[in-house]
Every structure is written in structure tokens, then in C-alpha cells.
Image 1 (cartoon, helix red, strand yellow):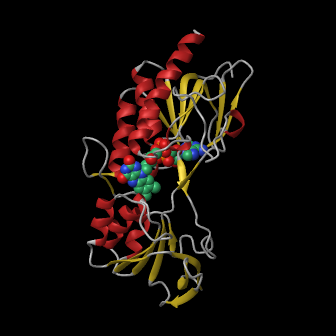
Image 2 (cartoon, rainbow, N blue to C red):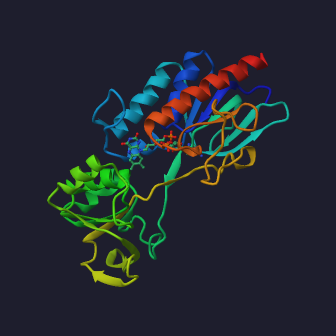
Image 3 (cartoon, helix red, strand yellow):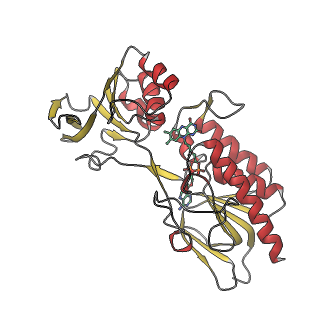
Length: 313
Ligand SMILES: Cc1cc2nc3c(=O)[nH]c(=O)nc-3n(C[C@H](O)[C@H](O)[C@H](O)COP(=O)(O)OP(=O)(O)OC[C@H]3O[C@@H](n4cnc5c(N)ncnc54)[C@H](O)[C@@H]3O)c2cc1C
């Protein structure tokens, strides 16, 4: 380790929280590495339009994600494209970050690994993932041009993505577990104003089946408990699931405390119970998982890491 570069701060995750942390850290003259395993932007790279980020109406998700990372890089952060596979704090307090490439060393670490789409557990959900079941309209919507899609979920993301899909698919049927949407009224109204969108309230998908692609879907009426199986020509239907997300916490699990919702508990400076380790963004236990709260967390975590590193000097 003696010959290795030791960064002041290493940030794991290049979504909004990580990019914001990197920007603030680099601007405070800390040597900063940001490690990202995939596309810049995290979850927003999977959505078409972000229409609630202040000052940037209608920016596309991938564009905003790229802009955030470019901004951090221009401020001096080093971007490392790698998957982090392990995180340890050595006895001398230095963090050792194992990746699928070289190990990275840092005096402090901000973990911003975000969240992953939640599965809903119908029979066939896993088997048909990528063969009719999807969690990303922007990534997979084009495969359903002129076809019929079912969108599972009644929240904000489900409505947003249902609206996006309504411009591509022949029909969009929202499958809503309760007897009402959970999304704000304005968002629901714009969705339902589309001619090709309909809703099945109090309904869940119990099973998807078929050979290579989906050709049958079993729906359950949540009020009566009755199930009905409908059949479709092979490959003519898709099921998009937007049922919330689960925080990605595996890397830090031994080093932090967790809340009952699975998210990491931090103080208001984003500090965990491990000195020098901070968590930011959707992986935290929090009330609102959005871009604005993720970037706020990232900025706060970076200023806390700065104070911690200064204290070591
Ligand atoms: C479909 C959809 C639509 C949305 N629409 C909106 C919207 O309109 N407005 C809004 O404000 N919010 C929206 N959100 C929520 C918003 O995207 C999130 O709140 C925000 O992206 C959280 O940022 P984050 O940086 O905490 O995590 P993420 O965006 O999840 O980023 C985490 C990053 O960490 C990386 N990572 C994870 N594990 C590792 C590892 N082991 N090694 C290296 N890298 C790793 C991931 O690849 C990812 O890039 C939407 C979310 C979804 C899913």
C-alpha cells in the first residue's frame, strides 16, 4: 500500500449523489476519485425526461446524468470506470476499495450506490426478465413499438414511464394494485388524457407465461381474489414493472447501521457509525428518493468528508 496513491476521498457510484459529492469534494481541493460501474447518471440514465429538477425543465435523464459527471470531472474529480466488489477500513484508518480492476485507497469514502428496481414477485417475473418483463422504459420501450404493454405500479415513476410508453406502444394498460394511484393528480391526469391508456384498478399480475416470449398473463382481482388468464400472440405484449426501489447496501452492510426500510442510517452530515465513511442518496433511509435530495446528500457528505480529512492532517 506504501507506493499506492491514497485519495482524500473516494466516491462509489456515479449517479446524482456521487456526482454532486465529487463536484463538492474536488472544488474543496480534495484529491477525488469517483468509481462507477456502468453508465453515468445512475437511475436517471434509465428515464426519458426529468421534469422536476429546479431550473432545468424537460432535461433528459441521460443528458442530466452526463452533465453532472462532466461537471465533477471539470472540477478535478477523476472518474474510474470499475465495479466495486469490496470495502474495508484498514487498522490505520485508510479505506481499501476492491474493484474488478485495481484496488483504490482513500482516507475517506462516500458511498452512493443508489437503489435497484423492486421486483413484485409474480410467477415468471424472473424467467421472462428481458424477454417481456422490463424495469426500464427508456432502455426497452422501443422493442414494444406498436405492441401492447402492461405497466405495473401506481406511483410517480409508473405514471411517468406509462406516459412515455404511450408514445411508443399501441396500448398501455396500467395495472394498479390499489383502487387509486399514489402519484400526484397532475401526473395521473396527463397519463389518463392519452387515448391509448387504460387502467385496471385493484389488480395484480399473478403470472406471466409463454415459450420464448410472453403469451399469457394471469391477472388477479385484489377485491374478489378471482384470477383470469388472458392469452396474446407470442411477443405482442410486454410487462413493465415500476414498483419502487430497494437501497443497494451490500458493500457497506458490516460498517453501518440500517433502518427497517433497509436504507443506511446516517446523521445529518451523512456520517455512518464508521469514522470517515459517509453514505448519500437513495441508499440512505429517507423520505424522498429524488434527484434533488440525492444531490443535496452528496454535497453534504463531501463537506463532512472534507472536515474529517482536514482533521487527520
Ligand atoms: C424510472 C425512474 C424514473 C425516475 N424519475 C425521476 C424524476 O423524474 N425526478 C427525480 O428527481 N427522480 C427520479 N427518479 C429517482 C432518481 O433517479 C433517484 O432518486 C436518483 O437517481 C438517486 O441518485 P443516487 O445517486 O442516490 O443513486 P443512483 O441514481 O441509483 O446511482 C447509483 C450509481 O451507483 C452505481 N453503483 C452501484 N453499485 C456500484 C458498485 N458496486 N460499483 C460501482 N458503481 C456502483 C450505479 O451503477 C449507479 O450509477 C427516477 C427513478 C427511476 C427508476
